[in-house]
Length: 192
Image (cartoon, rainbow, N blue to C red; front, side, top):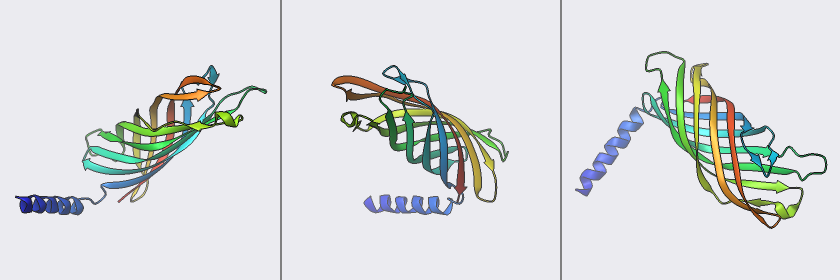
């Protein structure tokens, strides 16, 4: 029975390898982040970020993705107020459903995924510098795929990302850190 199991895994692996032409993709996404939350009654300024992503087309209209992301925000402080930078980094994974289901070269997609990340705080007061534990959150997005060259695809996307309920201690006070934001990205993907 074990031999049959190993033979089946080998056949499945060979079948996936043989049919994997242009199923894989690697994407690079610079992005602008627009916060929808504040921190301790202080607004956050527009941030930036980067994302590196690997994709695999499981079915003709279903893609799984995984990768790494990094985002940065800072407080919109006044002249004599404490300046705090927020760096969020971690891992992403999820799926995309491509629409329409016809043969058009330009495609649309809906994306749903999870984020496993942590947030680092860097402050003017070094006593407030800290990092949270890794936590699981979610993201929802939609985008367009526009073929550019033979293997290159332009992928602009808008996404809502939730990073909430991170416990932190600032100035001897227990706080809950929530950074939810809308991301606009203009990614480039290489398919192979």
